[in-house]
Amino acid sequence: MNLRRTSNHSHHRQFVDRQRGVSLAISLALLTMLTALGVTALRITSMDERMAGNMQQESIAFQAAETGLSMLWGGALSLTTEDSADDADTVTYLCDSSVSTCNDSVDKRKKIKVSTNSRYAGQGKSAPTGYSMDSGFARHYFALESHGQHIGKTTDVYAGFHRVGPRFGN
Image 1 (cartoon, rainbow, N blue to C red):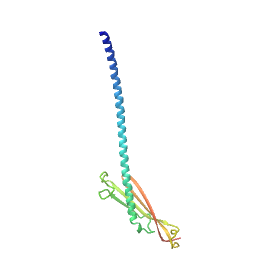
Image 2 (image 1 turned 45 degrees about the horizontal axis):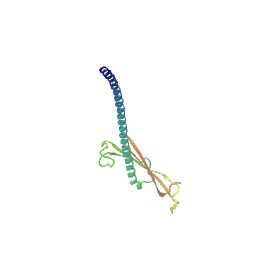
Image 3 (image 1 turned 180 degrees about the vertical axis):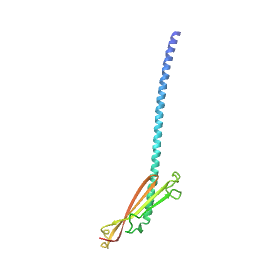
Image 4 (image 1 turned 90 degrees about the vertical axis):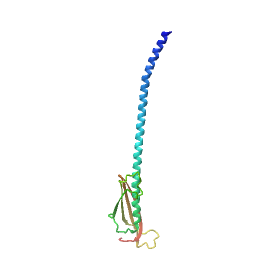
C-alpha cells in the first residue's frame, strides 16, 4: 500500500507541474488582453479630448464671426450705394476678461480675430410690389460678411438686406 501511495504522489506531482506551466500561459494571455484594453481606452480618451478642444475652438471662432456680424448690423443704416468691397474692416481682439468668449480654459495669449466686410451688392429691377412710387425707386441690395478665427479654426457668417431707394442708371 505504501508503494501505491508513492506512485500516486509522483503522478499528482507531475500533473501539478504541468498545471503551473498552463497557469503561467493563461496569466500572460490575460495580462496581454488587459494591456491592450487599457491602451485602447487611453486612445479613445485622448481622441475625445482632442475632439472637445476642436469643438471649443470652432465655437469661439463662430462666436467671433457672429460678433462681427452684430457690429456690421449696428452700422448697416449708414451704408450707401457707394460702399464697395474695398471697405473691409479687420479688428483683432486679444483674449481678456472683457471678451465674453474667453474663459479660464482658454489660453489668455491666444488671439481671436474678426474680419468684417459690408458692401453694396447691386440694384434690383423694381421696387417691392405694392410700393406706391415704384416707377422711380428700386431695391438696393447690401451684403454683410464676417470672418472669425481662433487658433486655426475659422468660421464665415453672411447676411444681406435690401433697402428701397431712388433708382439710378437704366
